[in-house]
Length: 427
Image 1: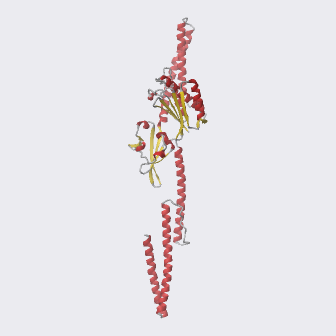
Image 2: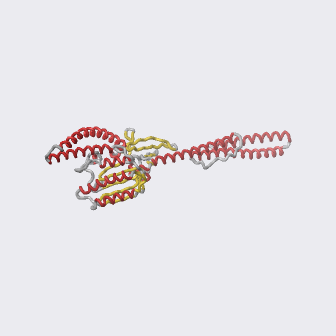
Image 3: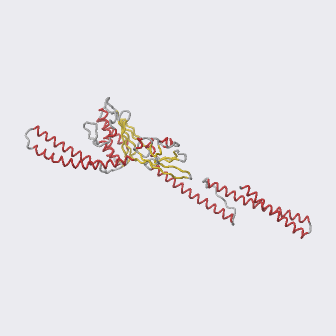
């Protein structure tokens, strides 16, 4: 198109030059009455006008070339190349000025867009919920650090994988995980957005365990209020009557029986009162804790209590922001359960593992034992449920409550040799 415009423009100027030269030749012939002078003057006129025409053609074609180069650079998002104006006035000068103004405005818009995109991706990285971004081809192009909470590896190592390869599927217009185990823990929400004219899909995972736990906790609170009220109303007169009868009976056997009744009534009342306190919010005193120091002090404590047991401690976490006393209480509960499970198992286990490490933007502490694992995982964190003869079934419940008050969560599973309890805390 450029070549055609240049050719047509040159042709028009050539025809105009020939017309002017012809007129000059006719006028000169009529005035000078000398053919050689008329021819010479015509040649000078033709050469002069041809040089001027060629110069003008080069200026106009050069303008279009510079405009085309500038537009191509703007289309590619390259604003390092800037048009230099060659005209000082007229429509050509206005065209150059408007193109320069447009380029500068697009440059500012792109700079602002890049700044906003940088802030947006920084925000995505800081969010605790896993986020995937898929390109037009349906391949993973970006994810945040929380991606590791699900896949236990950084997203960069599996960049370019499809949604199906990441256990994601679209079902009846909604996204979900393909496996049931992940589906019961995570709810997925998706949306589409355009970046630089290309369509992308964004998927956000929400941990529904906290929502379910909140509902479960509310149900247990209502249940405890009803049961606790009935138990107190029933046991209070029984305990009072047993205490009154002790002063009237003469047989030691009867006195001992009444003492046991009073003692068990008091124990049940305290137990119900204690559990009713578990569901209430805790007052946390967070501080920057050197986690390795806390784990070493707990290891020393249990090494003295269980001399025949060995604790394998690995800690790659430097600091953890938490309530030291409450976190220590959680770990003591879990380790006590681990040692008791080891001793009750046949063959007797003698190793308990504590492993602390970073995962995404969280601190993870894993406690493992060699006690054979949970006989019933579904009831492992059910209040009052215990497989131990003297167990009350509130140790893990209390631990989970403390961890959730820190904004984290506690999960249980069975490993190769025994139970595996995982504490995940926000870092």
